[in-house]
Amino acid sequence: MRHALIFAAGLGERMRPLTDRTPKPLLRVGGKPLIVWHLEKLAATGVRYVVINTSHLAEQFPDTLGDGARWGLRIRYAYEGPTPLETGGGMLNALPLLGSEPFLAISGDVWCDADFGALPPAPAELAHLLMVDNPAHHPDGDFALDAQGLLHEAGAPKLTFSGIGVFRPALLHDWRAVIGDDVAAQSTPPRFKLVSLLRAAMARGQVSGSHHRGRWTDVGTPQRLAQLQTELRRHPAAG
Image 1 (cartoon, helix red, strand yellow):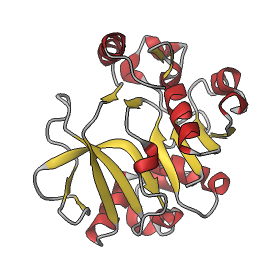
Image 2: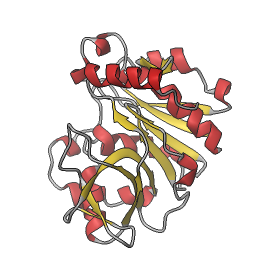
Image 3: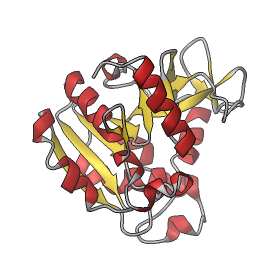
Image 4: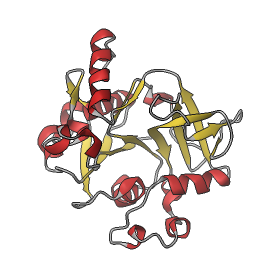
């Protein structure tokens, strides 16, 4: 797992007015931008090549992060245009830069103390998702993790997808057959959510998962950003 993708193209509408002038992954918490926490952890894990999807205020990412040399990384930017392509379209757009091997993908607007190095570098399945306990704002969770380590759309209890996982490019090979006639997916470039592909792969037993019981925050609102800031002051994290 030498390559990584960071989703950083979202508009951050629920974070306004903070995101009117700053992309959500560049908002600061614990003394540094959210995305820098990821970059530091990726470098410590041994990843050396990172693709960052951009759209909203895209020019701020290279201005802030540069080419990644300060972390021992090589950063490439995959611009999605003025309208973000969602997670599936964004991953598809970035594939030419990621190559043919499995890669780690991370949502740029989450904070997590998980050890990326503990994730399988080359899962036998099409994807391996890091799951977390359900937060208060998402009590019903997303997917069920069985005793064999496979994820299912149905079942109980359910856990929440952390926004962190390892993916094989083959997950997207037949994306048109899965997405169907969705209007946005027929646009150029196509825009669609990754979850539809994950559900189809789960139905075939091709998505595994692991349960992270440590710290994780979906920084989706100004209130949750402030809560994370307070938590990091009280309980600093490494990195």
